[in-house]
Length: 632
Image (cartoon, rainbow, N blue to C red; front, side, top):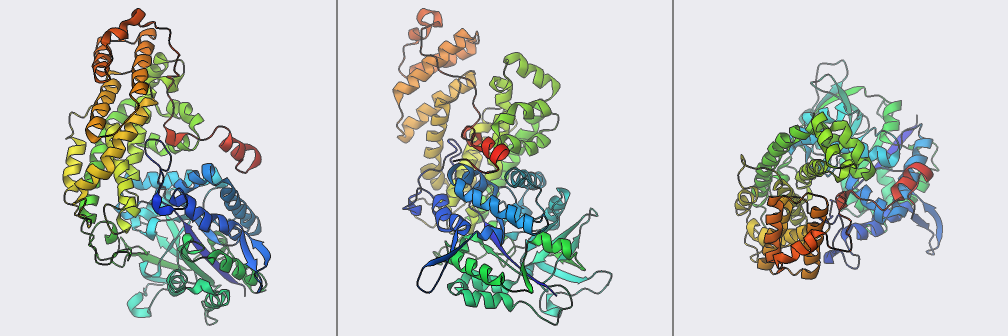
């Protein structure tokens, strides 16, 4: 009887892009690389696409694309980064999945992942759906097939999360053995559990029957061997690694066995240097064995449908023995870098973001219903715009209410230049950043002043800024309430004191500078826009942020002239321009120079999609539609 082996690599980096420029800023801790994505790509993701096999003399005797032979998922935000900055790596990933699918009857090695690594049991129901939908659509965009499986952030699970997966056609997910609550053979009434049997048998698939009537398969990975790979230096020896994999089989079992492990993909090359070479050597050795087949989970599941059923522990995960407390309380779990530090800041951070999300959702729902027939459905499909900005107009036409569409068409011949469309995108971006601010890494490490929490707080700042464009009469001051709650997030570093100190010193200055830069590249065609720029410039001065005053003056003059020429200079807008002129030390008489019809070097004030939605012209289209690869 054939025995099957699957090694699953969870390849993931949190989204690191500035919410204003869409670019990752320099991260000194990743030196000599410009940022952590670039560093880990070089140490792990790229090397796994060209893993060397060497002989005793150090000579290269073979090269293996590990993605062709191991199960893997790559986070959606990481995939989009690869498309722009690591095309060779992405080509190896896509090719590995294509070759594995050809070998395994269409069941490729790649599986999907929830969009930005939110802890799903802690997510709102609507966010659960969007996280899954965006993960599925991103997968389809890159791999040109529907995903069979989906990796959950930290494998954190509850029944509602499994329902969300199954509702989108996901057939299976991978969990830790301790997440199995109880199990039994189909048709039997007696359950087994960890206390009775000592642990779940990881060598087969289990069916979870959901309250909706849907079903989903679950694979509980081999815990001891996975731990040994991740933490016990098993990758220092190919022979030892292969031996441990083979030890997972038991001839007394009557079913077709699957020996499988699951670890962070960064284990192979980043955490353990040359780990990808060890994996390549093991792949080469396994291919020589007649009774062993390297497989994907989808392939094994197709050949061996579950004969067992199981229930899972709600609010459980693979990296916190307390369930999901690591992401909402001071449970004691930490990264180990500073064992004496407390994590009392985790709960105030989670609570503050939850309250902010509730207000953002309320605003999104209210304003969204003015524009869309179904704002939440429009948000689920907004991933199409993020993946390909050229679909923006068709997305809006598909979801906008008839009167909203008519209004947009009346404002401009090109819908994406219309104020109504700009408002719709601002609303979607606000909601997107409202999800990004829950990326799990913010709570995983040891302090609220760390790189990851600060990144999440920057997303929160951007969401708040976008919300300010809409009428908030029924909402409290978003920033004031949020910052007040951050005061309860006590920092381990005296320089910051608490979360408010982190906000004031590490988040707010960057947010103001980012907004200022963003405003310089966008149109000023509403009184609120001009007033906001005026407020930003004054706030930047208070924070000691320098900016190009000459460029700001040009922005004012060009925007004013553009409004005059377009016949859009209302009394309200004129008053806002005159106030900004005072801030920038421009005599307001200059604004009326030649009645606004000044001969100026015209500036393209056509609305542009947010930078985070843009891709280099032709790159993705060339890859997606013509060659099947990412063009350099």
